Length: 243
Image 1 (cartoon, rainbow, N blue to C red):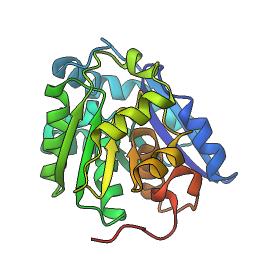
Image 2 (tube, rainbow, N blue to C red):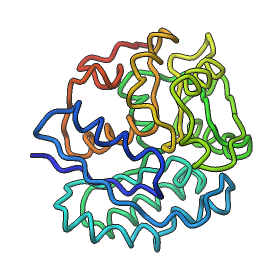
Image 3 (cartoon, rainbow, N blue to C red):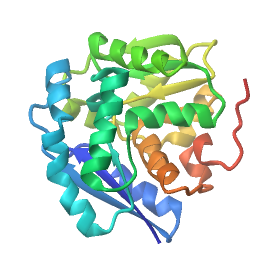
Image 4 (cartoon, rainbow, N blue to C red):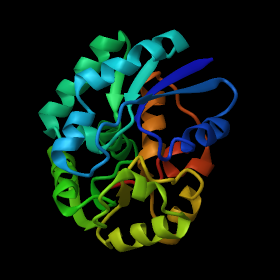
């Protein structure tokens, strides 16, 4: 049994995680602990506070008691808003607090793109433009080329969590760019686990979504590789994109 630990702020699209767990197989357990959200606002200051060491520390003891072997901070914006170096410091702090391998969804996107051999990406974010620009900057710092950026201007995670399948599909289509090898949807408040196949079929390319990437990152930390095509190209054994 491999036990994966996740710190998830608030209550929005957390039902993606048991769905993903079910698709991964019986020897993988997904342990989700909710951290204090603070202010639900897609503003830089609020997002930085949400990912502070104090808030992360509060959830760690519960994950340790659950027997988690790895931990991922399951909030993309609560990572990249600190910048490349700040996000690295955040993960190092989390690993020290946890006493186990640690990462974040932000770095999960980078590692997932590298796994697929993807270097040119398009971004479709629910966030306002200022926040989306910081995600694009983070990706560029990782060596990825951002060919297109689309912002929906959603002010809160609660609003993003109310989006349905068609809303997510519209976001992905609006973000897609002919020069991009993959499309990235970075909000962990979006429900995407049930529509990954539809997204990739519609765009004819890999689509990386926040909750999907978060669980994959936990598996990567645990040195596990799982073949689950229902979860998209990222969860197939052989990368389908070569550049």
